[in-house]
Length: 400
Image (cartoon, rainbow, N blue to C red; front, side):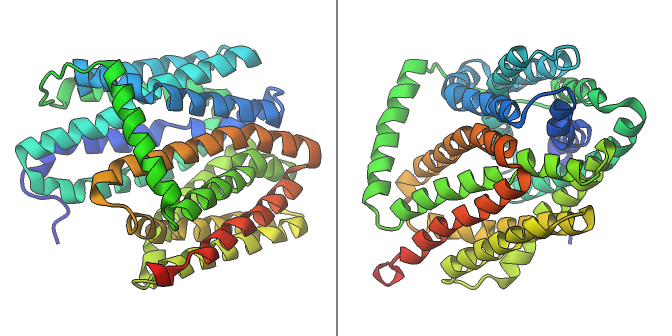
């Protein structure tokens, strides 16, 4: 079986290469929390920093999307990469908490220029050149991202060990610069100017979102799914890096060793949906979702007995495996109940609700870790999964 279609690489190689290199050199995610702990920030402050970027993304997604329609996807992506790169580099020099919050807000603003615009740029070009490429593009894209992320952890081990953890910022900045240069020089764009008014975009979004929210509220399945999503996302943030990093650090993990952990986590995130879909039976999506959430939550309950890295790391990786293995089932189950004309907007509403839940949960997670410690925060997060499980079980599938 061919990996690439005829002429596919000729058209798309700059994007495939950029996805790999960007993931490979983007060291910040693997070491970000441990860096801020090392310079004296509390977990609450780290939660606020992460929330600042998430909030900026929520606020500016629509206005920057209009920019891409007016001036082209390529211009939007390059501008976004420039802003993000400057933000990453500035963190090498700036350690004041309030300035860091501002920089992360600006980073989130920059991310909105490149996030949706890059996908739209590529899809538009594929649709003009050869539509059959679209079927495999996003799968291959994810493969390159996962490969780059896996090796970025291993690269980070070497670089952080010999140059110190602050080196993550200039290298992450170089990642954005390399991406911008690669795409500017080699990536083509097929673009037709669209005169879009930001005000009209907001009005259309408001109208369609209101319609989608009303539909979701009145739908006896989507109503439960949205509430379950908020609970699951909130609970997940309580057991994310903001809890695990200080716990593993307390148990003796060295800074550079978090690179190994990042590679292992990337591998788990990549393979768990593939394994999960092998066990997924048509029409049994809800049962599979409930089972994986229960298994992941139960495994995390054992965190109270993890007194060394040999016990803690398997708990982290196993729970991660079960939580991510539910993703294919969750997508199939969610889209089963949405009419085609509302599919995009209801999906966007779901993303916005999940993102808002994350923004709220991150500072609370940091505060809990500061007050009661990472072990009890992770333990509580597993207990919070119970309402989400109950909501899934309340869905009356016999009425579908």
